[in-house]
Structures are given as C-alpha cells and as structure tokens.
Length: 159
Ligand SMILES: CC(C)(COP(=O)(O)OP(=O)(O)OC[C@H]1O[C@@H](n2cnc3c(N)ncnc32)[C@H](O)[C@@H]1OP(=O)(O)O)[C@@H](O)C(=O)NCCC(=O)NCCS
Image (cartoon, rainbow, N blue to C red):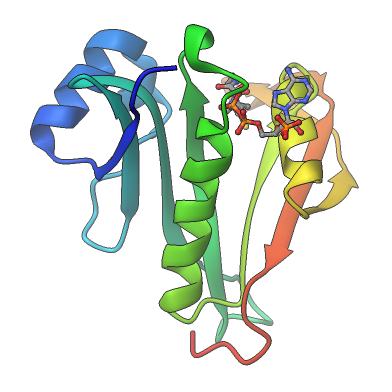
C-alpha cells in the first residue's frame, strides 16, 4: 500500500472526489459544505481514495436543547480497502466531534453494506437493528433493513 495522507477537504479535493465518485456526492449530500461540517479525505499521490464527512445535528423536542454529530459519508475506493483507511477516516471524525464537545456520533447503514456494519461493530459502536422505509413521491415504496449505530464520545458534553 502506497503512502496515504489525510487532508481536510477543500474545493480542489472535493472536485477530485466528485470526479471519482460521481453525482451521488451532491444528490445525497455526502460532503456537506456548511461551516460547521468536518470533511476529511484519504489521498494517495494527490488522488482521493477515500473520504468521510460529519456535521452537528440538533435533536427534536423534547430533547431540543441537545445535539450530536451525524455521519454523512464514509467511502474507500475498492483497491484501497482493508488497509485501515476507513478506520482512520472515522477516527478523525470522532476526534473532531470529541474535541468540539459533542456527546455522541451516529448514523444508519443499510444491510447492503455488510463491510460497513462490521466496521461500526469493530470500532465500538452500539448497534441497533432498524428497518427504514423507502419513500417515492411521498409514498412508502419499500423497506430497507439495516442498523442505526452510535458511539458515546463525551460523558460531560458541552454541546
Ligand atoms: C466500509 C468501508 C468504508 C471500510 O473501509 P476500509 O478502509 O476497508 O476499512 P478498514 O480497513 O479500516 O477496516 C476497519 C474494520 O472494518 C471491518 N471490515 C472492513 N471491511 C470488511 C469486510 N469486507 N468484511 C468484514 N469486516 C470488514 C473490519 O473489522 C476492519 O478491521 P480489521 O481490518 O482490523 O479486521 C469500505 O468497505 C467502503 O467504502 N465500503 C463501501 C461504502 C460503504 O459501505 N460506506 C458506508 C455506508 S454507511
């Protein structure tokens, strides 16, 4: 495995990621660009080979005074998988959320990504089986089994 460098995603790196990964980046808001987001890429010789992004999320009532961090994306290019890049990208999101005082980090993954589910489990996330509805034009079109997962980062959060 060649040398991998981890860099925060600027406009130039984002362009390279979109060139590699395609329009899904924009369509599914995988790299949100708001000021409060954290976005990190794994680079190999100036080529993006992995990325992850997270942003703060305010909770709904009756816990509206609390917030946590939602993981928008984690992807590693196929030839680069199983070399610890995914783990490093997620650890980077966790470190950012912890340092910024958030209580927990979380998201949901489909059963169609078993490798990701194994990764969350191995990385100490609490796993909760949950089937999500798939909507089309406001109607439930199908069901997508998967898991919610979350990890506590701060027992005395400041946010
Ligand atoms: C999930 C993904 C990001 C993992 O990236 P990666 O760089 O291969 O992950 P790592 O090498 O850091 O592996 C971390 C741990 O995850 C688990 N894991 C990763 N791939 C796995 C696989 N194919 N089968 C079983 N466990 C796997 C292992 O426990 C691994 O630890 P280990 O290597 O010490 O056993 C990558 O497979 C990927 O991009 N998948 C497609 C996109 C996707 O599913 N994204 C998540 C949507 S929520």
